[in-house]
Length: 71
Image (cartoon, rainbow, N blue to C red):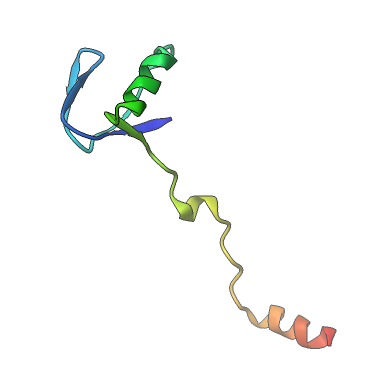
């Protein structure tokens, strides 16, 4: 999971500027991450809505013809 830094801070011995996107190394204490979320030091990045939603099919001639033939 990726997180965004809410303000300039030091995490895991490194300094991070506000707005930087980070991913914690595997094995990072989950309670540490939850505490940072609770204190609003970091926020979870949401996946783009465009990636989650399937694309709507384009209105092509074949789709239109098949609808008219079905009636």
